[in-house]
Length: 122
Image (cartoon, rainbow, N blue to C red; front, side, top):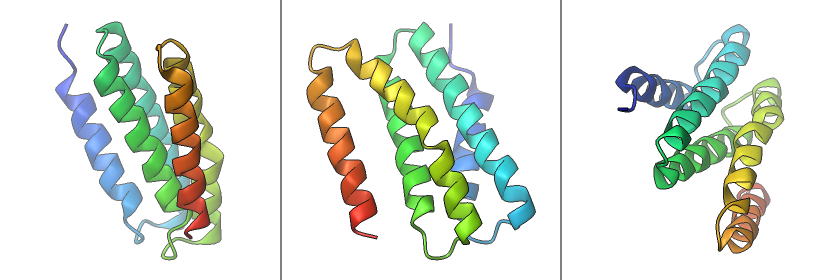
């Protein structure tokens, strides 16, 4: 089973849009929701293919894209809150992924430290 090219393209396109500050506020909720949904679909497809490295990359990329958007000075407070509210989706998925790996606890601790650093620097 091959990875759906359209799904990768959607993930890439939505990532770029999320990083832009010029998205209309009324469209931002839909954008964040679509982005998280796309990330979860892609991560699920990668898990079904037993491609844990790409699955981890996808989830980490989504997590830190949302975290960066949540502290971006160019985003409104409402946009930042939306990103913070949706951080749980890739974070829970990564937590589950790491719990199945031998070095998972170490990876999870490093992930939490990096997230704290991301929010502390901003």
